[in-house]
Length: 214
Length: 220
Image (cartoon, rainbow over all chains, first blue to last red; front, side, top):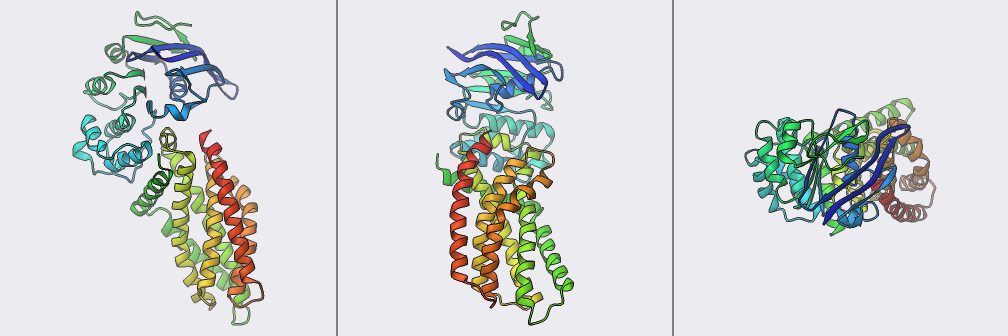
């Protein structure tokens, strides 16, 4: 079953074309890496797929639902790690997750499991602004998997993660449908059997992993 | 999902963050005291004119403190890029808005707890339950409007300029009704009951309108 069906996704910021006619079909538990230089349109594409940004043109279906008409229904379904961690600096790691448990309608007992999964148990009660950048990124990943989503949209989650990034991401991505933007081609090849390469907002295909070309 | 649980979680999170950082309340309290001092020294205050001048100073200080307090509610979320994470949850935008408004209201009430006794000391005006009730009732509606406009302007660069331009005209009914209520409570002519009734009407009207608008403002 196709989890993501995107047709001709296009987005403009004013006059600037950030994304042009990108198509994407992604099946259940499939992983796809999105590669491209800075400004290639990776973050714009991922924000659209996460329903955080409405495209200027094009259609997007997630799990058979119109992603923008039904986006509130899809919130339980998807987890999103944005480019910036977006944490509350004065709250501890555990408090950040507890807050999102309340918003996701998830039991707070899940916090302990998630902190363990992302390797932050030892700093659970340290304020977010006292965590290293890598730890903050782990916490953002933990927040995205708090409600056990079936679709994960990860925008450069490997940034600052350190040498065990691949192991952590393999654990987190296991059994889920994943769209994963990164600059690290080796990591992308290791984690994702398919690759989408963006250049100037358009998808271009080069690698054997690539299936989506327009 | 229980919207009250969400609103309380958002309010608790904002208040906890303020308690730990102490970014806003000490600065606002200081601003309020300074505004009252300027008013006290700028006018020739005596026992005859204190009751007529004090309400004006009170509302000026309250309006400008409110603009700062409400302006920070969404600006901080935007700066730390946390608003998107919150809006990516299934929680209702109206509940999130209500939580932000509750927290902003609580912070301004804390400032008012400094302002009203200080006004009484500096201007020699009575510190009565009637004055407190009028100020609290006005604060509710002002918080609803202020936080809504703060959400709207948070995404633009000139938000510090836009927030007063959008908010102040709609706060005028609260300042007029609240002004009459406070003047009346301080012994000047005016119908206190009627002014309080108007404040309650405005509160209901603006809380309902802003809650309806919040869904569209935060969802987009």
